[in-house]
View 1 (cartoon, rainbow, N blue to C red):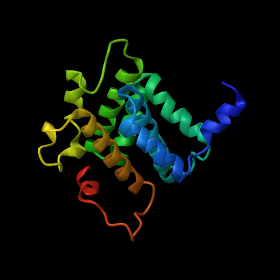
View 2 (cartoon, helix red, strand yellow; view 1 turned 90 degrees about the horizontal axis):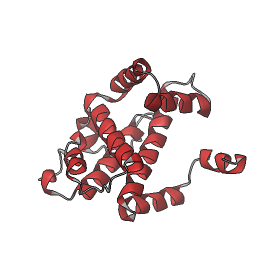
View 3 (cartoon, rainbow, N blue to C red; view 1 turned 30 degrees about the vertical axis):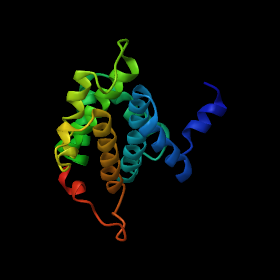
View 4 (tube, rainbow, N blue to C red; view 1 turned 120 degrees about the horizontal axis):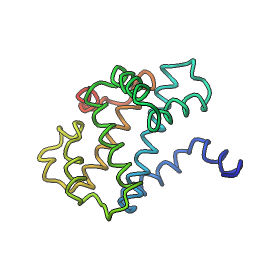
Length: 177
C-alpha cells in the first residue's frame, strides 16, 4: 500500500464522511455492510481504548493490540478478550464477538452468503443489545444487524469518556452491560 493511501486511511473521517458511511451501511451490499460495520465499531473501540489506556498513545500501539487479537496466539486473544470483558461487560463482549463472526464470514467466506443465510440470521437474532426492540426476532436480519451496530456504537461512545450531559442516555446503554 502506498504511503499516501496509508496516511489517508489513518486519518479520522469528518462528520459528513461518517454520515456517508452510515448510508452505505444501510444501503450497501451485505458483505460490504458487514465489513464497514466492523470498521466503524473498531474505530469507536480504538478511541475508547485510547481514552482508558493513555500509555497506548500511538496509533501503532493500538493497531498492534487490536491486530494481534485477530491473528495471534490464543493466550493473547484470551487476554484481550478478558480486558474487553472488564472494559465493556459480558453482553457487550458477546455482541462484539457476534459482529466479528459475521464480519469474518462475510469478508472471507467463499460461499454465497447474505444476512438471509440461516446461520447469519441466527447470529443477528443473538445480539443482546436488541432485546429492547419489541418482537425483534421477527425483524429482517439486515435490519437487526444495522440496529445492533448502531446500539453498539452508541454504547462504546459512552466508554470514551464521560457521557455528554446534554444528550439523554438511552435505556439500551445501561442494559448492554
